[in-house]
Image (cartoon, rainbow, N blue to C red; front, side):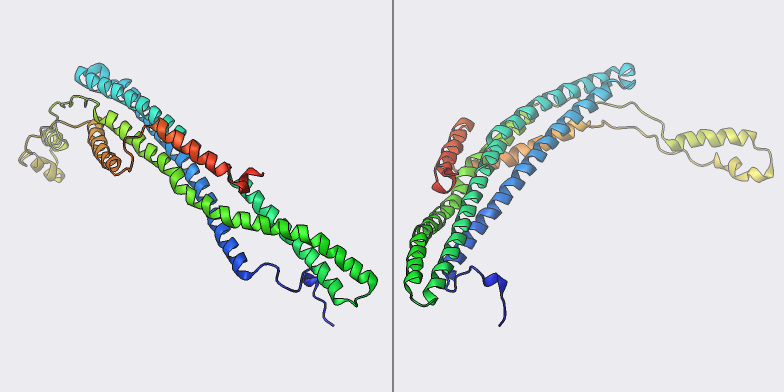
Length: 324
């Protein structure tokens, strides 16, 4: 006679149909994936805002470093340009801080609140699993007495086991039905809940790039004429020609006869800030186009925040999380 330890205490007949168990696993699997994606999105948004702040702080530091450059003491035109750049970078940093604060309030915080519901949901699933184990254990006990000879004591124990089984079975069926009804509702709510947050994210970007787009570009800095390396080489070879008397220096004696290179005149150079103006103009256009695609472009961030809170209250009212 073979002994199968895993069969001890387990009912012989299936107490939950394969269809019901498959439906439950599918719905719960979708919620587990949603939980993981929500946490990942929250983490990535935090990294993004931290990077934004670090970028604007670095830009301010660069402009301050340029102001302390000795060239600013020697060239007033360069000083004026760098001073304008420093003012622009400080304004950019202030606008960026406002954008990050808005994203924190309308995107990251709602993500955090949404994630806080999952522990209650997972606890409801654990209670269902515990009820299923109790159901299986008592069902196996009933089956054991049903297989025995129908004597008075056995019938009494069978009756008692069936009485113990009834409330446990009803408790499991109630928990199972509750989860199967509400898990799809919870999963479907993600669209209505997150849409106001994502609209606010786009809106914050639009406001930021609109502000940066309106910043006046600093005046272009014009460099002085400079002597290229080739011109200095002409002077060098001419000097060496007058001092080379030995036959082995024919190359140096003849090099000064080479025609001098064409005069080299520098053109106006565009500072880093000018390329940033182009960048912010393009980003302003991109996010402006996105704004026009929003379903409710006229909603304010305060209205979107209230929508988030309303949807969150509806989710917390679900019995599968409210009972925790």
